[in-house]
Image 1 (cartoon, rainbow, N blue to C red):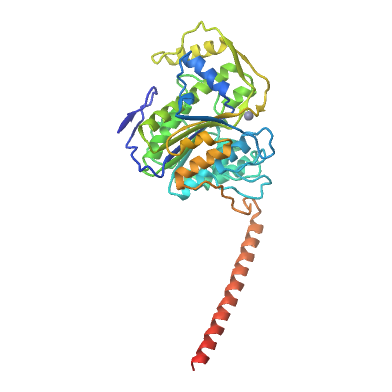
Image 2 (tube, rainbow, N blue to C red):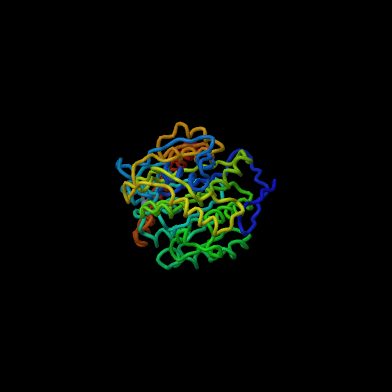
Length: 428
Ligand SMILES: [Zn+2]
């Protein structure tokens, strides 16, 4: 089957999505800070009064609690950890338990152990909390260097986003290249990538707000990165896991900026629409859409539209201007500049997504994905957190383990020899 991609300057095409029904391809969308009202707002601005939001029209939809292990308002790190590992934790943790004594195996790692190729796509710097919680383990979301170091060892086939500055991933780019990664820094270079693994970092830090980006920007959009990620991962002919984050819906919420919000949520909507269309044609695709938490206590109060909705054949600038104008024509309210405890959407299509109807919390999202990989549901902790111990401590632990194993083997061997001798004597 050949599926032509729509509405992008680079025309990527994707073919042969025929995999057996198990394991499934898994595509997880996370709208950072995306409450239900934010989705509704995006629909109003982009489509008017038709129910055209792809996020709101999945076969299975519910709302889930986002609270962290303390029962309080989550940050992106604790929420992403709950989604990626099935374990609630404290704010700030990156795929580690509440006291950071234990590494938690992420769904991306479990997918890799089961023969999947994997990808991470975001519009923030990739060492930011949400992508980090899928491919790194750390006590703190602020440890960008340690997170980048984990990334460089994790074998994620497609990594697209921001962060080529030294303080994020820059220091580790040469390590990625040594592993065979192709490193690209602009949209044109990305379009010509033909193989995995690839590391695409298009900005020093995070992407600029979409409403400030120009048509000829060298930075790809979230949809363009999503399509390219599908294209590359699918060409490996292995099942794939891909996490795609709409990172800046949250930042628009922190800024209480409805124009910034409109552009970010509509772009996220575009990326989701593309994946949903493919999932509708491929029964072995599991596509999930959720948010880590709501940001801003946002609500739509009233609207009076003078500007018509953006049309497919409008130019880039016409679409941009219409979205901005229509966003301003909605009267909104913000109750905070921070995160809230409001429940967020969990929607999906594909294998095991009927279980969405029983989901209560982020940790259930993990179970739904996990089942599509290996039929299991339980979280996995690796017992002892040794991620960032000094090298000499790791060496001493290794030495002690070797000594214990060595001593144990010696005594077992000695007893076997003893028993053998006894046996021989008896026989004699
Ligand atoms: Zn936030």
